[in-house]
Length: 163
Image (cartoon, rainbow, N blue to C red; front, side, top):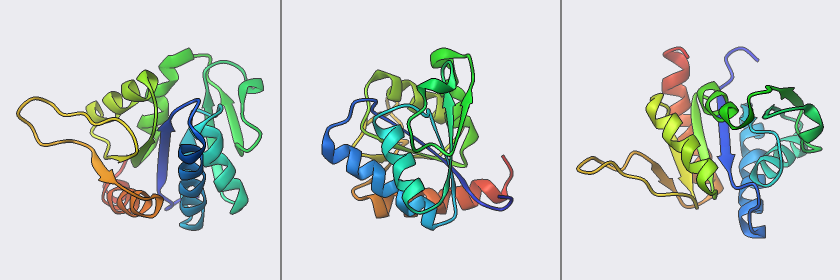
């Protein structure tokens, strides 16, 4: 897996069907591009992205809050962190770039952690955040293809610069 970009995917644990399908397509595209995908390993967007990755015979890593019994059926490697919600920091810090799809307050916290860590965040049907007086920090994407393209561009810059 050396040399492959690592992309973290975050988002809603209970997405509507259209958001689930966006995440599934993102997973398929990331796997086709040879990326390692990191997520929280549970349901919703996490399940959908792992499902897409599995459909393309790619690799996903699920960082779970407690035990591996929480893992969705599609994650390649479920890891128990024992960290609860704190594992969100590990999810976003693991990636060369982060794609956020849908989401509630947990996703918003992950976006905040990612930005604080200097990770590029691609927004697909998710939160819009902006520091007063600053440029919007999220890169907006309107399709799964655009989200993956932006993530790979940003991951290339990050990946070659070291993690």
